[in-house]
Image (cartoon, rainbow, N blue to C red; front, side, top):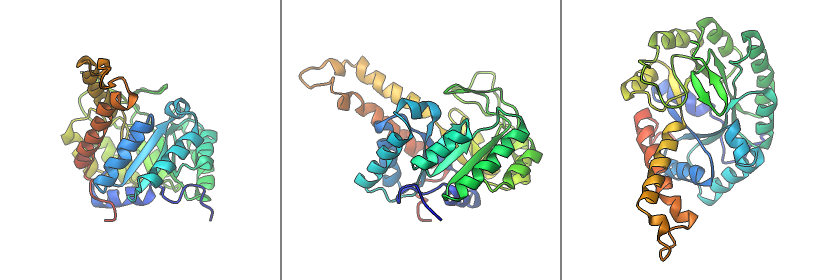
Length: 298
């Protein structure tokens, strides 16, 4: 069986299965550039934490394409001597073609998000992708229902997942399942009250797979912890990292450190350093909450 992806990258199956069994969740962190990726990888190594780094299709395009992302990630894994398990994941892939393109470029894990399609078309495409993915030892995430809100042009109204569909998706051989349980991409509006734990329990009983919580940024900690006990084994984080990066960068600029020409405060390495540190601190905070910190090799 061939392996396209780099020797240091792993697919996400083993880590999410361990999380599912151990009642904790693996953090999935979307990346946007070199600083983002380096900060997360360094924090993961320093805290002995298995980690999934991911790109949306929008971020993929922004960074120059799948081959650029794979080259950057592989280079960092080597140069930083990262030894904790790391998966490189496509988040919300909207087509089988995009998923295959990422696999061929060297991604070790992909999500096909067919939640915008009629269910029968969604599961047919998942089955098609599974044939390709199994030949390359790639983990696959699928989605039923839909996640509320918008992320990189992917819009969902928040449809709750169907347990019957969850069982059928689970039978395709996927490694993990995302499903609408009242979660929302982006910042949560004031009217939002709670995840639907009743729906989550029904879905988990039906598929018995590690499940994925999208829109993890902004959900109260007690709800996150409860969701983990009910089968959530991977939690996606994007907005929370972006806000941490923004706030730290804004403070640097408001303190006018970028205007200190004598100290070369305008140097991008200095301008981006506060945001970089904030990313690492947020990673540590969230992985501690998720329970995956110090779980590498355990």
